[in-house]
Image 1 (cartoon, helix red, strand yellow):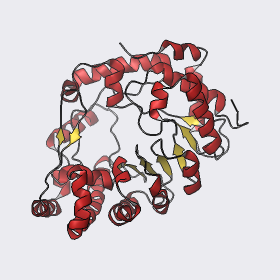
Image 2 (cartoon, rainbow, N blue to C red):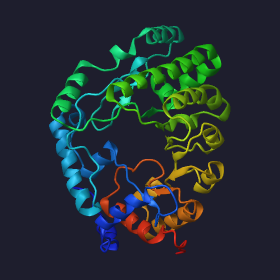
Image 3 (cartoon, rainbow, N blue to C red):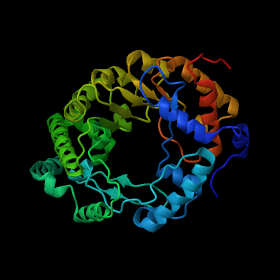
Image 4 (cartoon, helix red, strand yellow):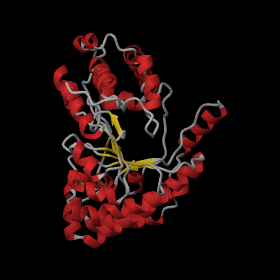
Length: 375
């Protein structure tokens, strides 16, 4: 049974969801003409499993008909109550290789969980050999598996829409702490700095090479780049500046030239890195809920802020708590017309459509530019 939450559905019973999203399309455009803040939701597999109380997560990742059926079930509910579908009902069975795979990290699957990239070694000498192998690989022949090429051609021949590839990836801190255990990464930055600098430099060059291959294959010439880097919070400013910023400078320089979108998502408390983010030209952000939207606006005055509702407040809070936070965020960051209302970080598992619909109603009422409403 999908999560509904009758109290919140009753509070938003007069919301016209079709009119909301029609207006929202105008609000997503840049400039001064928009009537209110735009809004978005990004439910993922974690959310889906909690929403539908799905049976087998292992089956979800291995069985396309089962996965697509769950997507259809969720979309039926969200179309009815939210006016929008979020899940692909013709999901892909295969995919290109990831940058983490280049260094030997592969997904592990466990019942009840989502896929988790496994660290490759705690031995520095072995990791040096892994870097040797990665450096010598021809990425064009490596990154597009035969199963993916067959599926791509079948979809192309059927006239189905094909995705633009090479649009973004996880950030350097999260990549490093997937390929190696997080504590190993930090220890080696002090104990084996030359090895880690080699990892950094190879990661940067191979990320560019890999995504140039993906862009060329899919005919993607649109500039811009997205980054998901939750684990950047593990780095202090000095470590981030030495080991992460150089990777991003190289990748952004190649994929997102000046003037294009440079987006970073991080669920974590990484407010100490805002000045570094500004120096990298990050211009669209979705940071963790501990990072105050007023501070973001101060440190990145031109950035689009995608947030900043604390995820667990939306999931667990009272209507009045959610309302007060919506007002606070709008007062701190909405006046610039560069606030997109969404959760600060991911939409958490257990959030029902009633609460999502109620947040839509609050945005419709509170986040308008004619005046800043006080509640």
